[in-house]
Length: 129
Image 1: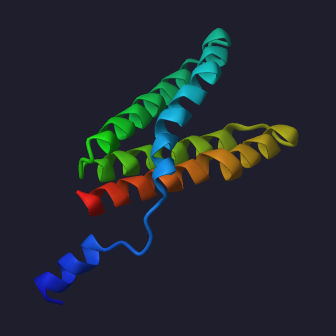
Image 2: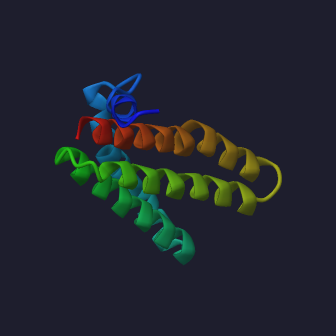
Image 3: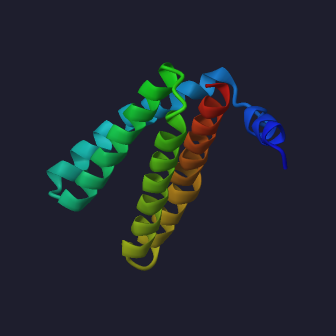
């Protein structure tokens, strides 16, 4: 494949997210704050550290998206990796019965879709930048 063909493929994504999705990272970061408070009160230090890392990564992604930086691709990938790892750890550490069901529901309905959106936002920013 020639260089121009590669550039054409990279610069024309098949689908761009609507502009309103750009608010997802900062909204998710703000939504994490009450959960961080609950974890801190319960002295769940490892989970507080993980969620603070996610909080910081989400805000970093938001800042890079606002600047239309191609580096948002990497930030989106980092957020997706953190969220996927968090979902996996939640499921792996949950007890049998309702706790594992709750972890699965959280993973499927919140963490993994958010990871996909962050990956997509990063990809869109890189394509536009």
